[in-house]
Length: 131
Image (cartoon, rainbow, N blue to C red):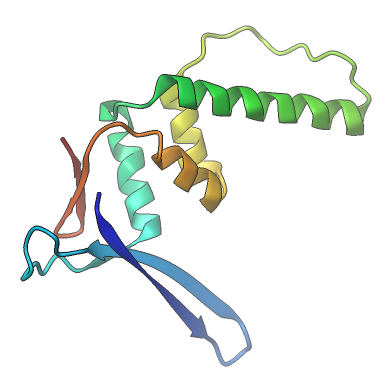
């Protein structure tokens, strides 16, 4: 998806702030495109809905999963003194892991995961579609 990004920061009277990242068409194919802009959170929500149709880079997703698992093992050893983890042996499901990251991960993890999508992703009238 070729896009241009923007940032919007809002200052509230009570001192709080809101920060939004939004995407829009870069008009490389159609200079008169009136696609509009869409917030990053909405793109993530739509990708979660399309997750079963996405062609994910299996090696990339598996590597990220293994890194996360190792991190959890180190955390458990350090703070709970557990020498071994009795994690159930389950079949790795890249789609399930990708959905987890898109719904529960940090914004950086979500952006990194999106780089593992092999499909061409299009934005038209604020709707994400894939080729």
